[in-house]
View 1 (cartoon, rainbow, N blue to C red):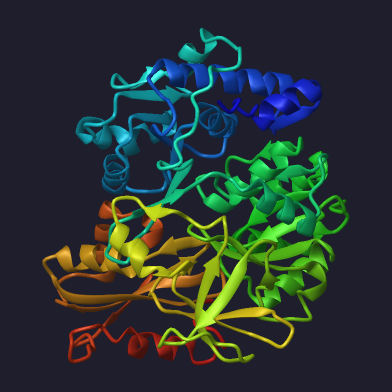
View 2 (cartoon, rainbow, N blue to C red):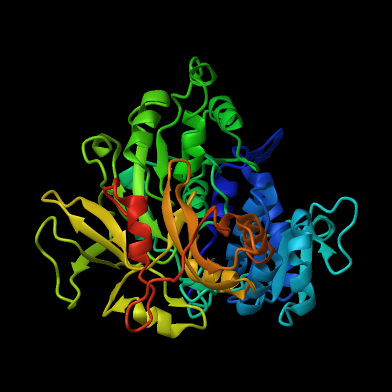
Length: 516
């Protein structure tokens, strides 16, 4: 029988018990203290029947509790299912039910979002809430109280369940319903390749710029933690606060979509000038393409030599890396293949594209790709080409092996780093009695990369703002269209497929890329 492998956090706590593991505002936890908190959480979860393969939904803004819970789930061998705290109650209920969650753990701030799910989700055995100093909702138990009475000892080994995976991130689906992306065990060889390429060190200090329910911010934070670095928790993003934390805690690394950093560099020069930001060595740019002008402004205002861009996805992991020395030399590129990752381009007939500058469907093969769409094997097959997998992007490579993403097969919109699929918005719009037909697509936005836009066939009796409010009742607010075109008929081909390119292209005529 194979002996269980010690969790890396346990190893770090034994080797560096007094080293700072986590900082949130004025609260600091050493590795010994942080590991003790994680163990208390893990033992609470085990007491509630969590074992290898158990699906546990968690929901909350970045916090000490969220960071500790992520490690506790790993120690239990559970499948962590992060829930976007910005989803509507209706969307949240769908995720909890679709995931077959046995347990839901959440911040008290999210109680209104989850109350409907608490009444409908039949698979959930218990609801645990943190931060309820004035009392938990009557349908949940206090995680804080349970953890205070739970032992700090290492939890009993619960093993792993390869078939269930280790995490499941929900990403919106082209049919309008979110899909659970099942991910397996971490390939340490691949992680070490990233560590070597990006240059992570045990004394790195990671700032949680992005929300930890996203796979990217969570994954890169975990790399820093497992190397023995320090995590600085930022609960609510604020550009001046971001600068304060980088300077105060000598932050060396973070992961960010373009929008937060745009807000930083948009600050008046006097807000940045004179600050010591020299500690920043590894800023990972992803979640949406970074415009070239934003990269230039970051380098001018924050400093050169620290900007890495990666191309990847929840499904396929990190696939390419563009190093700092290539940021201005290779405008529009997302870099070369990441260590341990194979990339291939295929034409519409499925033949490999070998020539430079010839676009093809981008496919990835490697150990970091996802293993399934939960309860949707057909979608997984659609994304497969033998051993190769895709998320529908079209790309080309140049003579030096640098890749350029030039379009998407799917209609996905990336706004402020959030993946938004038009089908779910179209379903809501056409449910309104005054809307006969709708087509949703992305248009250029200097602030967000893309913003949500809708072409509608609708009665004059309903206003744009009323339709926007109607969408917000059923969807996360960021999915509501910011603009509307009222037209007589949605263009379609003979088979009935919406010709969105006809609607979208006029907005993108002056842009080289159709994805931001």
